[in-house]
Image 1 (spheres, rainbow over the protein chains, first blue to last red):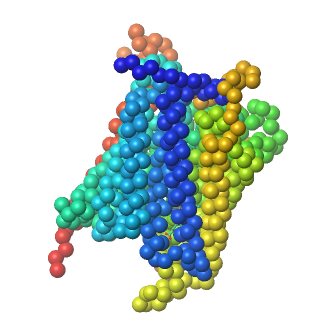
Image 2 (cartoon, rainbow over the protein chains, first blue to last red; image 1 turned 135 degrees about the vertical axis):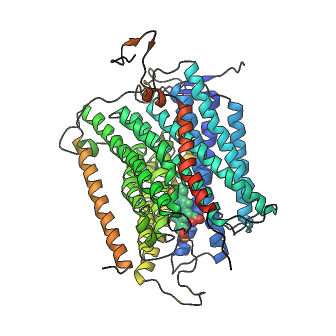
Image 3 (cartoon, rainbow over the protein chains, first blue to last red; image 1 turned 120 degrees about the vertical axis):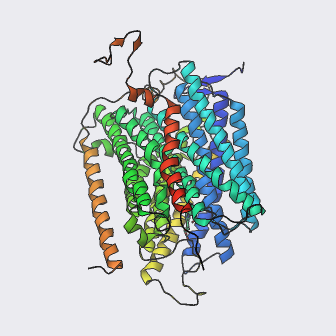
Length: 562
Length: 57
Ligand code: HEM
Ligand SMILES: [Cu+2]
């Protein structure tokens, strides 16, 4: 086979770009951003609808856009961007051409066609089944077909990633073990294979059911297997955004992980255990035993959580180590104070790390506890929690790395750099708001996926406490702010690509060295004390323990046990 | 024959510990990453659901 592969070395960063891989990274990332814009807009409309006094959409549009929002934001945006991350972590970081680029393009087009088909079906109005599409709610057959086509495309892309690893090994473009960022991407790819397989197992029969070939889909069976996909796909996100945290730490600070071995072990915990936590979506289902629930969500999930806590410790730890080596040694926190807070690549990543841990991580463990789950199941607490993981965690991280990648890939300077400085903060505050306020409303019992806050239509009247409506209003205001931040991001990205000042291809001086060896090789920072990170970790643990017990107390009150 | 020091060449090949070999083999990791949830989550869960007795009216 003789595919002549062209490649270039980026004059500024020293990164290697195979021609085809570079094009694929660009197209996947940009397509993702378009869907983020659409999905985010729908999110704002829903937040305004759930604001009792504003209540902007009629009921049918609320459920329609809720379906579209879940699909476009959670699935289409993130998975397109993840394809870009996989190609970057394989081809670019291992300095090898992409294996089977034609297949990767086929994957891209299938994903795009599938996403468009499903969107059209939802927007036509007869598939408002929400992205979980639980039977007996039935969507148009093309709704399921679109998702299946999208998933096949993503699977092809994932195999191109594996192929590229094999190619790099054959051509010996790296020594010893895979670099950590690539290992993290491998974790994401492994989880993706299981995710997509589970999706096929359940969505193909559901498609046949919607076509009339199968009479009955058992709802519990559906939920169980669907969540093997639905939950695992979130774990692709976690693995991918944690890898990007390591990448950003390496790019911005030249930081190396404190201990490669420990970080790798943490990814290994993900591979072994993270997917089992899918059971936390079924904690209140009768019909599944407590043994199954508790094994999968407690014993196994805690090991996966341990993995996340290790990453949450070693990423800031590696930054602290790198900063201290540069002489920022005063007190506990000079390294953090003197970090480049005006650089959106760093500020976005660091805020994402903090919010993912404090808002998303802690609440996730709480909801994953079988006994406590019952007090928040199907309340707004759930979307509150996952906007902290998947928006503050994954989306904000991907935004942050885009500020690095898009100028490098398109050879343009950032458009509106002044706005870019602020964008991550506006978005982060907005997202922190929607997470916290949805959780607050959920704690007061407000349902998720429910248009009618006042129960005007209900035969038996019911009122939420007044405070709940206040939290819903604050959620609406935060939603506007997140919308503003999200729109600014899309404008900056599109503007950079179209109107950003072209960078000359000839470097002014010698090319800057690649962020070597931090991203290209395995290896640790060596022993260095990181007391600041240690204090942060203690604060985290303290918060965790406190909030955990608050929830048991709360459970005792709900059940009137004394 | 077990070599006591991992860094000394063991015959012709360098002795690489099992754990390291596992970590360096993407396809073995893929296998484990798919089998674990398939067994503990899907198969176990589906078996429990399948053994729920059908309701009689
Ligand atoms: C401007 C930013 C956003 C706002 C204001 C927003 C707001 C909302 C609101 C109000 C809901 C409905 C809650 C309910 O009534 O059940 C929701 C649901 C949801 N959001 Fe967002 N969101 C935003 C961004 C995102 C992003 C970026 C993602 C994914 C990466 C995401 C994923 C989801 C998912 C999966 C649901 C659940 C849909 C369902 O229950 O079927 N959101 N969002
Ligand atoms: Cu989950």
